[in-house]
Image (cartoon, rainbow, N blue to C red):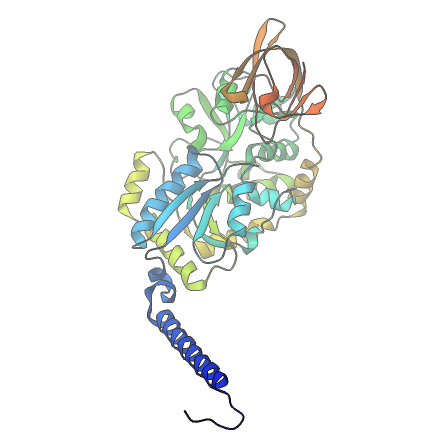
Length: 433
């Protein structure tokens, strides 16, 4: 073995090993570069990128209902437009669609998360509502699929049968809403303020309960989307007394119904009518987080519009009595941005709304029954059974003055319900053993 001055055998062996490791590293790097330049996974762009990918579609409501229906409908057909893709529906309800919208906004901008939520979040953002961690003006808009004008409806047996009778009411007009942060509540508030109607908004009416409560005479009027109450209009149980804008879908049924846009006289009324008309034109909106990779955003927008124009999707929607009136992502984003910039008359009303306290009632009695692991609690109040729905996140519970979980409420306890109305979700339940 030949020796070199100043170089030991161990040193030469170490150098050889190092050269070997460097060679392996270089080879591995070459393989990685080669894979990234020729492999179909991450190198693919646009439509091809979605081959083999899962796309999360976050629905900001629970299962069932219009938002869930449209999400599942479009997800099925967008899969066809993006071959090899799989759309996964995730329902994330809560806080008036805020939870779902926050999740969409915070997602990675890789084009693999989109979702839908209520247009009413435009109001929430203008109000700078607590808990909002999104900016609708910065989201990546995919499109919208519906036009659903805002209307005020009443029962056929109600005291107020026309728009003029309602706006000239001498007594308090009772509107209904599911909660204080909902579109129905905000719309009813602004309508009452703009037209100077004496009004009260009763919360706690979830879904179809709003129309049923009106039919029972508990409330006088319902402010909402035309489609949501159409089955009651068709059956002759309710009637629309004023509309905000035109409806192509129900054009014949809206003949003779006054348009609030034409009835508006004051600057406040005109600003509100304009807002409501735009609101109705922007239904079933879909968006992703800000700054989605451009070619992927283009692919999503194209797939969305192709799905919206698909005869199969249109046929499926028609079978469910739903009309598809799409708008592409770029145009949807422009309308949203315009709606976020409101005149002083609207901003003033929305700011005033933040100071309004929802009226509550209290009823007390002994707990006689617990249902569904504490999700419903029944008390006997002066011989009348009353049932409170109990939310694990929204309902505050105390037992002997200390905060507690809903499972802590037991039969035999003396409890006081604080709620917007009888047999609704309780805001508070205070119990004593």
